[in-house]
Image (cartoon, rainbow, N blue to C red; front, top):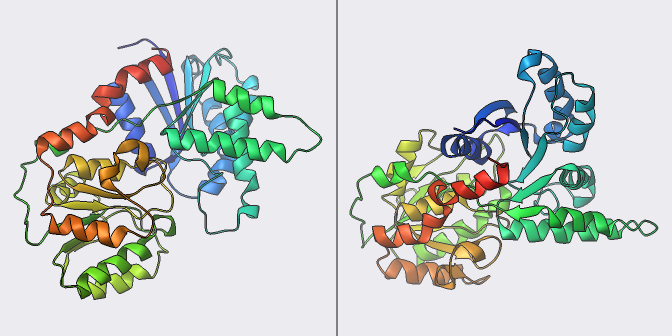
Length: 364
């Protein structure tokens, strides 16, 4: 184990953020300490979590405050944290500040109008600016963020701050979030029902995952008497698109599961029964849920946009407006991936393949 002390500051400890941190700790040995808040109220986290975390550090024993690396996600104002840390006693003021972009607020398709989002995009920008090193979870995310930063800074007509974007670009890299596939690999490969394939939907039940298009296409398949079974998974929230309630009634005879599965092993047991995993996402910065389903043997049916272009070749991608035809052909093709093919498609995204890149980035 490395003798480096790494402080992980995570204001949104849940979902893919938590999965990433747990994978990092399990696969990149070092001495870690986690300071976290539950995964809710992301706007308040971005605005106010920095002073809250500084107060927590002040409450530590002085001997415990010395870290070599501080790793942040994007739901915190790193500039405020760094400014407030100047007053900390026994703080290593030469520590390395790293930020990992699971998402960026410039291009997240929120429910509110974009004009209400400026403070959060600004926090992302200044956080990247003051960090020593920046990593993004996909080339798509990195390119999108840098392009949006250039548009943002051009609005300062009487100030030339384009060089600041160049500084962010020069210290940024793409590091895919590692995925631990071992539990999926341990599960017995069940025989797939070729005559009644199981379609997997394993995304958050939110507007940006575009569930309306997915269910509309399933209705067309149903009317065409094309057989399929359906498992609708993914995290749900107190408010969700109305199409989910309608889908539960409309596809009652097709559904084998409808709802979030908290137990990971039970979730994986359902994935390995799947034949196809579908995405209709309007926005996707990476795609852990899809990669897990592909590892479990599901054929991916994905939009030819977003981060999916860099994860899979064109045979698994559909053009806008062509989901129905692509999915219909996949269902009629008696879909299933062999274990060898699923491994070939996903191995480069495993922690085993990526751990060394993280060691270099963390300076271990």
